[in-house]
Every structure is written in C-alpha cells, then in structure tokens.
Length: 137
Image (tube, rainbow, N blue to C red; front, side, top):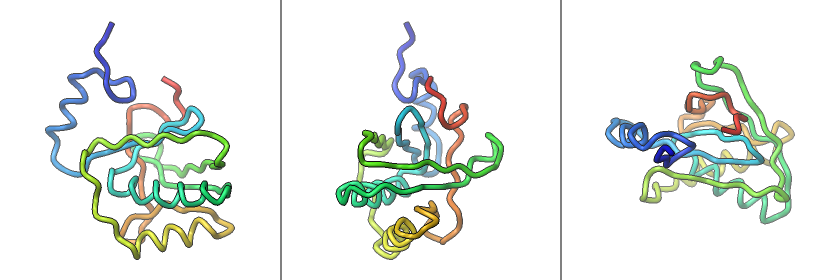
C-alpha cells in the first residue's frame, strides 16, 4: 500500500511540493469535488463561504480552470446542507486583506454568485492537480 498524504498523492510527490518556491496550494472538497487554490486565496474564500453558510445561504461560486485542464471556467452550487472541507498546505494563517474579503463577499451576494478573483481583481485560476475537478480519486 502506498504511503499517501494529500489528495491521494504519494509521499515523495507531496514532499517535492514543499521544496517548490512560490505560494502553497490548498484545496477544498465539496460533495466529491476537489478544487485547489493558493492557500492565501483559499483562506479568504473560506471566510466568505462560512459566513454565507452561517446565514443558511446557498450560492454559486465560479473560477477559471488551470490551462492544464482546459483553460475553461467552472462553477459549483454551494449549500450549507453539504459538508465542506478546507485543506491548507501552509501551517500559518495568511494575513487577511479586508478590501479583498469585502469584494469577494459583495460578489457572493450578487446574482452572478461568488466569482473567485485574486487581490488584483483578476479572475483567479484553480491549480492543476493532475485530475479534472470533480474527480473522486
């Protein structure tokens, strides 16, 4: 049996990611769908999503896919009735940008839903995990 750690990846592959320069990539898992984003972005998304869920609000969330999986767009309907799991590769909580958080929250209240953007306001891209979003393995 393989020694696995994150999203079914072998331990040696996970350790390679720790040696990479650049931001750490976390993921959220929702109803069998796994999507990876940079930890800092994921932290901001977690805050917005949990605030919506605490108010029992359902909403649409959309983002741009990694070019490695087609460079398209993806969207998911989120509802507080289904558990959501956030996994961060970094151990420290990133600094929270209140302006960015407010933009994400405002977007989540619109008829277009939460459009995932980076701090620069550009459409954020998910990270390629070697599988299409929605892969169960």
